[in-house]
Amino acid sequence: MIAAIMPVRGRLEQTMRNVARLIATAGPIEWRLTCIGGEEEADVLQACMEAGAKVRHILKPKLTYWEAMDEETKLTDQPFIVNLANDLLPGRHWLSRAFAEYRCCFGSGDGLLGFNDGIHDEGLSPHFLISRNLLTRLGGWPVWYQHEYGDAELCARAQALGAYSKAPWATLYHDHPINGAETDPVYAEGQATRARDGRLFNERRAQRWPRV
Image 1 (cartoon, rainbow, N blue to C red):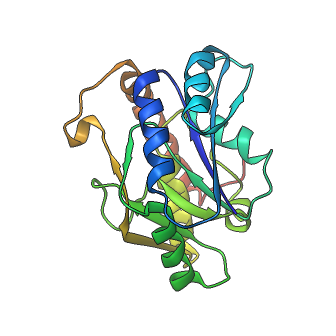
Image 2: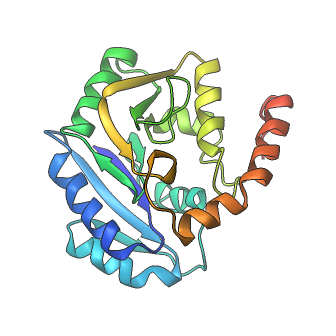
């Protein structure tokens, strides 16, 4: 089974629509969607549950994206994990196509397989399917970043290990301001720490990704 995890913050109606669409379009595959949020997200998580997702409410204020991923991953033992967000628009069979491509690329081995998000080229995948074994080998979710660049670190390190690929037909379109969507306070919050996260990424890359 695949554990798909969606950290949530705000955007109640949008999140509820996205949860329903993700479930409807995943394709023929065994998986479970869990939405997770901090103490201020009770109403959003209730909407996610009504839309068909499992939810987990962590009574901590303002979990970062990577902290939320880490919290839920610790509580599941599934061998494959997908990191999602509430501004993704899935294409048909987005998950079953990704897993089929994963098997073509890595067989029964460990790897990171990126979805096509409509923004980034082959070297970066903000949302991906990763084996738990590889995630553990990379030190887990990069909670040292506030929001951005955690995906860049995991993708760069997976590439260095020869354990990275991308599925062009497994589509999770990123409905982001860079693609023409309207901005909002959640995007502004992430952008506010972009420079700090970028500096940290460059420092860690120069130091060859030290353990934290």
